Image (cartoon, rainbow, N blue to C red; front, top):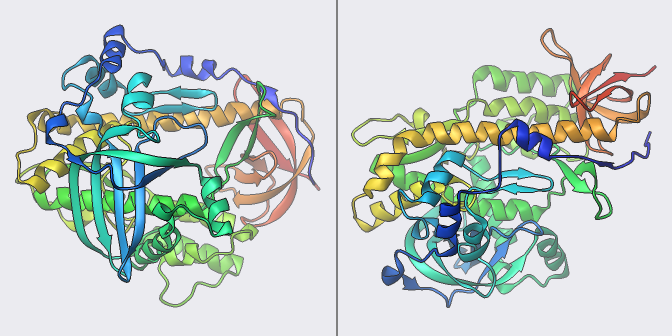
Length: 472
């Protein structure tokens, strides 16, 4: 059953006020951004001959990465240029102080609360097309099996040739006209995904609710965020470089890692039990990640199994590597990617990347890690964990408010739904409605993976809550 739901005007300032978030910076930080200059200009390699392109969501201005992926024997040669934020931010200066308080860019449907002043993040620091920019250039060779065989990182100047969004990449791929710099990206992405699944990585594909403007106006509604194969191919480049950075820091015994512990036996058993209950075959010898990756995308049972599979990835966090300390493999692993991993690919939007990148540059060149980095590392874990929680809260509250607002005049309305999670003693069942894309608690829901018809019983804008009940 599909019912037309109106779009609605929403005041997202309400959430920013609740969370004490502002896009404004102190005048000193804004002035620094407007006058930012490359602190490492004299030592840079000129790599403007490399034909890089960017792939980002439509409308993005804070472009952290530019890439080139080309065949190399039976493997691939990857160039990945990352905005060199450390070159534009003076340690101890006004931008540095403000960004260390913020931790990361916070995103809302009607705009962002940026990590850095916009003249830097959307201007001189952004890898905009046809602009020469300071960057940290990663050069990685990957063999035909997906294994890294050579890694290099250096400060350089680069120039992006073209800006794409994901839909444009997919359209060009289907037409057989991908830009030469990313013509090998689909093959590379699949090769690396296969490699990571063999190592036990887990890739979840749960509905991503996206709040979008209705017909370009002030009203908002919810849809399932379009995720194309191009999103996954591009993500594999970032994951590759993040794993390179993680390995460099792990070997050196200094830096900041992103960690996710291996899934517990209980979580794996729970997923196996759910598969058996839903009648979905788990092939002999397949890892949890391989099982989830092989599920039929449009099957209702897949949504339920992905929901259970999310419990495999509990316990994410950050680990500061202290010189002289010993770390077991279990301490440093990121089970989601099947190896050691560090954030280094989004420094315009995430604080940790600036510092982890400096560690990698110092270690690979045989230099001491700068003092401003070693002084900050111990506190970064707490800063990033706190800002991750705040970003998650901002996203969740935005979605909750939008769900309640678009359903506010729909009490009693009926929708087709899929049960994502059945009720237990601690929490109600949860159902997913595809149009508008809403996830909500539901009374009387059948088993996970089942389809049903539900009606809206609660749509409270003030409390930002929705609730459903299964109809007879």
